[in-house]
Length: 242
Image 1 (cartoon, rainbow, N blue to C red):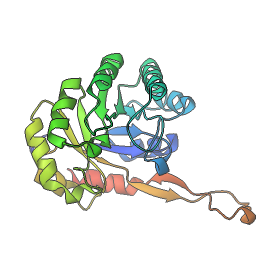
Image 2: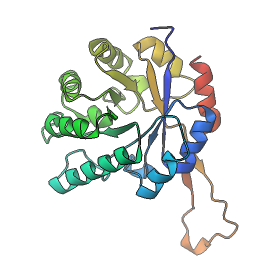
Image 3: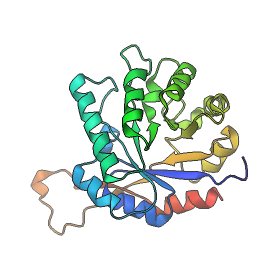
């Protein structure tokens, strides 16, 4: 396993950030919008634009809103429609996460979505970190047919959950990929890989981007700052993972 190339996935929140992450050498992109909501489904225009501009794997998140992962019938219909759209546009994978009210994995809907998306790969995102039993959750997600689980080990920062991630990696075996993320940077990514046995890792490498506007309506008070990615941080992580 030590000789296996570690896959670096970068989470981005715009087409521009995706292109910058790809130029910096990212192996895969998790494509989202609305960073302040924790990432929601990108717009049709963004999805159509990005797929035409890249050859590396891009997995859009399919998440109709911020907040929890308990979805109404109408929201579930949105998830299905967006998933079919992403499939039609030619994306190789997507990222989803659905829970039941009691904190268990919504196996029924997740299984249906995995089948609907085929042959796309499906990653179950950090909704996993909100489930009531990570090891039961692991088995349930494996049964749905998802290919990987993005997780910070049920705490905000994955660096504080190394034993949990290691345990999940060992229990998963070759049945599903455990993708550690949240708080991953160049100064800790190789240690996380070494200590957990993970073969993929996830980071947002985010950076605030100041507006290029020459005119700023100061009466409006708020700063026009957007969320981009730090290409140097991506390159540093790739170097650390060599």
